[in-house]
Image 1 (cartoon, chains in turn red, purple):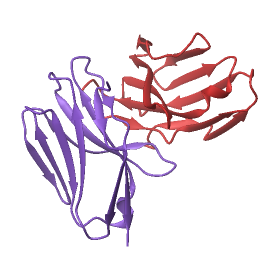
Image 2 (cartoon, one colour):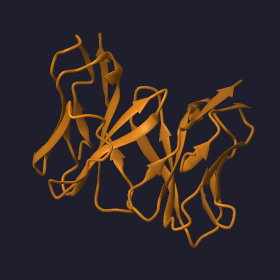
Image 3 (cartoon, chains in turn green, purple):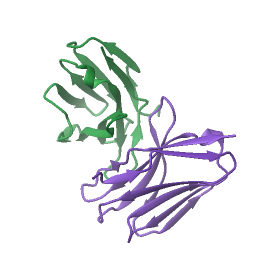
Amino acid sequence: DAGVIQSPRHEVTEMGQEVTLRCKPISGHDYLFWYRQTMMRGLELLIYFNNNVPIDDSGMPEDRFSAKMPNASFSTLKIQPSEPRDSAVYFCASGTGVNEKLFFGSGTQLSVL
Amino acid sequence: GEDVEQSLFLSVREGDSSVINCTYTDSSSTYLYWYKQEPGAGLQLLTYIFSNMDMKQDQRLTVLLNKKDKHLSLRIADTQTGDSAIYFCAESGGSYIPTFGRGTSLIVHP
């Protein structure tokens, strides 16, 4: 398996624009996580899914953030409208269950100007 | 305070041992993990320990767990320049979802 695949690797956009980040989890993994990493806050859990269903979105910072998982092989994280403070590295991770190890993608470096 | 705490930086000389420390607050932790993040990459699981163990060894890596003090450490023997990275401690407790520390940047110099 190619591992967790995220796209794009880098995204530069202007304030107010819509941003969509994409993730393909490892086949057979039924848990999917979205994290955000910044120098100030470290690694923050935004939301996680189990069997395509959102389980906990309490980490989503604002209504500007939304995440979907239409099927077992694809998830998106959308920011609309984007703001400079959203600049961060966004990671997707997948796993086979709680208490199990997570497999991380390479991340999307988002810069909002 | 944070649920998982780590020092932010550690600098060691090549060939020496590195010890990265972590403290956590959740007494119901079941698994404790060490992840490694190399520049420009995602986190990769290095090793993990179940809470009923006090030590685990895997080649150059030794994990020690003091459950009474809620203290976890990662020892890297014969540290190499390729070990330079950010090391994250994580625990999965009552919520069963891993909670990560802020990460410790390990700098290995010749």
